[in-house]
Image 1 (cartoon, rainbow, N blue to C red):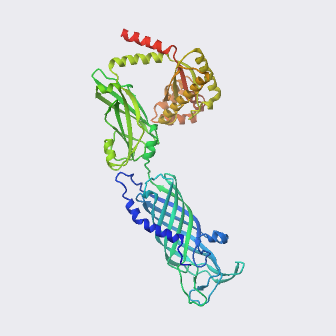
Image 2 (cartoon, helix red, strand yellow; image 1 turned 180 degrees about the vertical axis):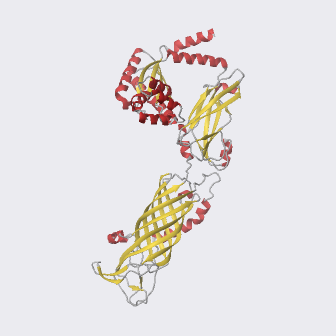
Image 3 (cartoon, one colour; image 1 turned 120 degrees about the vertical axis):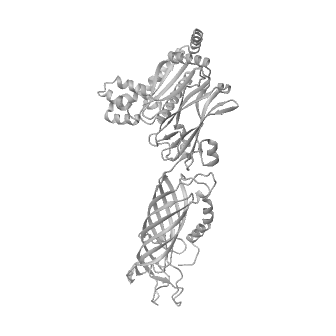
Length: 595
């Protein structure tokens, strides 16, 4: 083999050069994201490329493919292995495998060990080898920006191992590169030599627990006998071993990671899936001068990571400041520390925190807000968000408005009367329907054309005030249904505003809101249906710890539920208010004066 600087040798120098930096990168910043440590198993397989004495390799590592594709493609290898990632950058793996090497060489003086004869134009037929090695791996990208969810990574590796090989047949080749005769039979026994594998992995994170990778590894060996021959400088020179035999491998592999990834970035991105209710809303000053209320937090299933902690900081925000109240700590099911509530990953749940505090003047024109903050449990539960920021890595969810606050007792009575009259005067006029898990008006074209026609008639009659109340059928996760009902309210709102624009009407007022799963109407429809076992169905659902899942099970037994009842609940109802402003204002004034 020539003494030239190959790509593989340069790769080895690069790997060795980055070792000091990779070791330093393990520490990272104090508040950097903690490393996900995990075991994994992997399998890979692909092409073996012969770089020994009987190979076409000269200056370009894939010359075999250009001239001797048939021979090159019969050289294959495969490995099984396992490993451990013990920091953000550095890991190790152990691999064992089997492979085959073949090749042709023309125009090079060659000699067999112990034989002074000089040969030209020889071919190697299938040296087979069993190999094993231990490797250190280094994630280049994580040295500068740790991200266990990054789709693509470059991972160089270097190791040490052994190759237990059995040298293949050596043939004399004719001018047409065909076998003319056998010069040396296959070796009688296997021999052992050390290897130094150096390579680069091109890694694709296709799922939290699965990596797909391409790996190119160059194997330096301690033997020149893998092909039974050695090169000599010239016909006159004595036997001179210029280099050891080498080979490389280009493989495709799959890695399965045995870890419990805690993706708090995803939790923060999808924090809108958490829904909040406050009772009462708006907040009210009681007769004892205290403001008392419940914060009700609904967390959907398959959302809250098992090793995660969420600190929810509620506060009353007013012009010029805010009043913080006690935070609420939610912990994942595998967190060893205690919080206010423990959240099951599969089921999620609904959690209620009660508050009572003295009324302050600043509360009069305020809003009850909340900031969710997420971090990975590291042995400590941090009670406040200030301590989280100081001590650990965290992500911030979306700020949520929970309720309006705080009205005094007299204002509360007026508001109550007002809300009562509004609800009494609201008359359902039309309904938009939707397909399961959808919020597209066009999906139910025929029914929704009827709704459009009804709304046009209302516009022509002069009604100007409308309210949209949207719902979802109650199977599925509550958080998903809350989001779905809001999307349906928005879809109905957009449809109505398009019709208003086409009709060139002005002064139209539309309010809309999603109300989540419609349990009450579901129960009513089942009770009024002709289902044979309707009482048993309702009892089964009401007694279940997971009503949504039970409904799905009942639908499999009673198709009428899915085909006839649930479609009626996937809707957005439109209510109108005749002479809304004037009538309500008069009635509120009269009722409050009477009281």
